[in-house]
Every structure is written in C-alpha cells, then in structure tokens.
Image (cartoon, rainbow, N blue to C red; front, top):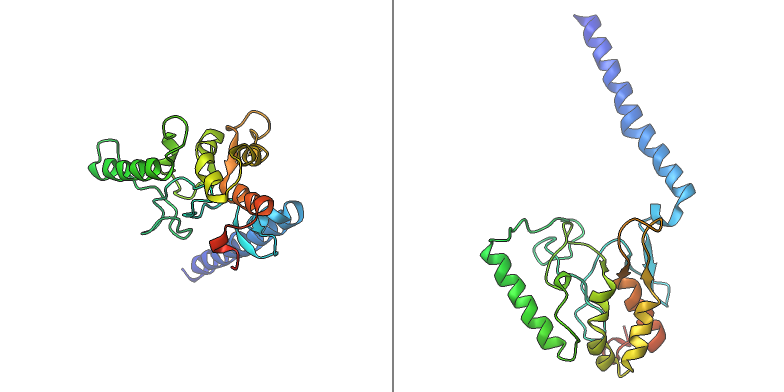
Length: 200
C-alpha cells in the first residue's frame, strides 16, 4: 500500500511540475520571443505614450466625437474584462427585445443624420461581450455624428475609418473589420481631442 501511495504521489508531483510550471513557462517564453506585443496583451498607447487599452478588448466610448462599439453584456455594467460572456438571452426574450429597442432609440436620437438603417451589430452584443471590432458598415454609419461633434468634414472622418480597416486574416479568414479603439486614437491624432477631453 505504501509503495502504491508513493508512486501515485511521485506521479502527481511530476505531472504538476511539468504541466503546471514547466510547460506554461516554456509556452509563455516562446510567445514573448516570437510574438512579444501579443504576448503582453496587445496593449495600445495614446500620443503621450500612456497605455489606454488593448486592441483585443472592447471598452465603452460614450462621447459623440468617438465611434461607439457594440453593446456589451460582460459584467453588471458591460465592458468588464473580468466577466467576459454573453447575456444568454434568446430571440424570444422580452428583456432582450426591450434592451435592443432602447439601444435602437438611443442610436437613432444620437445619429439623426446617419444614412440607412441602424446596423444590427450596434444593437446586439457579441458572445464575449468584449468584441473590439465593428464591420466597416457599422463604423461608417456613425460618421455624421462624429464629424459634427468634431467640427470636421464627414469625408475626412470616413477616410480615417477606411484607412484603418483590417482585412481578412490570411486573406480568407473572417471579414474586414474596424478596431474601435485604434480608429478613435487615430481620430484624436488627426483632428485633436474633443474640447471636453483635451486636458485629460
């Protein structure tokens, strides 16, 4: 009995060391060497060099001068990176319909000059609740509001968005997309920060 117990204990310790310490350290070390930026969280800095977020995690932008991301169901107030997840509300959910209706009314009120119907992605959450991207159509739909808030010609806002469209991965995977944080920082660099935020 003691011999079997010793063998099991030894196997457990060796397995824990290999899979719990050696393997994670080796994989992390390899990732830092091969993909240093991604291994450190794909962090993005503003023009002052301050880290303002990650290109992999959505964050709210409520100001009219910024592109706004998809709604988030991550956490109690949304956009909580420690509580990634969807709402799990189905198509027959009254709460989902009411939330989408409220978001639709807000979007229409905030974007009176937008062309065409509201893109569905602006009223639906993603599976993670933290999707940092919109389709080009979802971003371009917001051009008129952003241009008005910044006092800039809409064509210049459109050009800034189109210059930051990311293509398909490996030319075939996924769809073209726009990273909201990247574009909002590009807007600040090109046109300056909105007056209410200029001192921050």
